[in-house]
Image: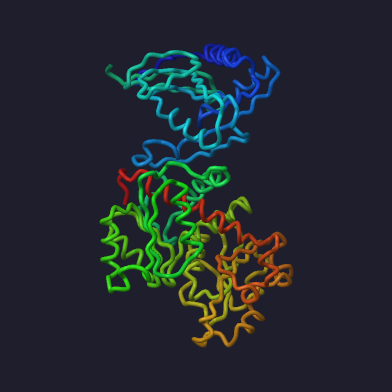
Length: 178
Length: 312
């Protein structure tokens, strides 16, 4: 595997800061907003966005964590560890921003939307991702993108976050010989 | 891979890491039960058959609820209303239902080993929901789940199982399961209701109640079946209650200060357990029932998820 740095710490920080501003702008403030991170790395991203929004707008935005194992379309082919879903507020009537690290096929987001709908009826669901790597297979598109990163399917995008990995970085791995 | 087996037939020989994987999965699935809409699409299009050759309310209902919450389709077969009354063999019944496209069997049978036999006949997963006097593994697992969520751990706990041990598949599953995860198991009951060979589980055997529950963190009470009187194994229910009945007084005198009381149900109030103990704050009998649904959801998810992957 060859590895290259697609985003460094400063780029990650600026991207998240910009997304926080865009969320506030698009929703005309932070009232009725809620951030729901998709496990695993969407959760710390959602928490950071909430901190930034609190700093910019002085509004505490509730943050939840969503595990989508029970909603995946590949349950039959892979046995997965189920993480916990922890959404300690009612999503009904809220403007929910789903947060994920990488947008790829869109299947994760499809599952996440089903999962949220089972918890209640949000007024709006939006999607924020740190990286959009292309190759979507469903008619789903993120509302907020940290960085558009064109990739081939054989490449891997790996997001590292301080909370879990000790550093902020986005790595692009290419298989040898390509 | 979390679970390396295709069937859940017993807790004897099930390694600790698989038990813990099942409990962890069940713990995370509990959240679904607290939602206003208790339904996830995970097992959509899969079908499950519950095949009960013995009466059951909680186990069967619990399995069916678990399957329905996961969006699986459930069909139930009771021998009294099926072709079994017309003389169809167990084997033929299994093959018939399998031919209808069942993806998993849940089987309760009065003969020990019937689920094992079934697992060799059908080519889909089989869960033992109680076989004769052998094992009742899902009860053992849900007891471990309940106990872990209350005490925060299983290893090192002192667990006293009290009652009609000889006829109890629950006692056997729990003795194996708790020993595997590092708890110390003591077993107490009248000598006429004590089977040989239980020492193999590592449990300590007592013929009196008091020393068995001394310092115990958990007193696990088994049901005394009234039928046992007729077979001459017990002189009278009243004598059993006097010698082995779990009362508040005995608990406070012998058991650990924060001891809890468990019972697999159905309860005979005033026989093996005093009525006020059943309803006391330290009794977790209703928690056991609630955890049963989450535990069975976890098993269905683990056994039916990843069916394409090779497994032994």
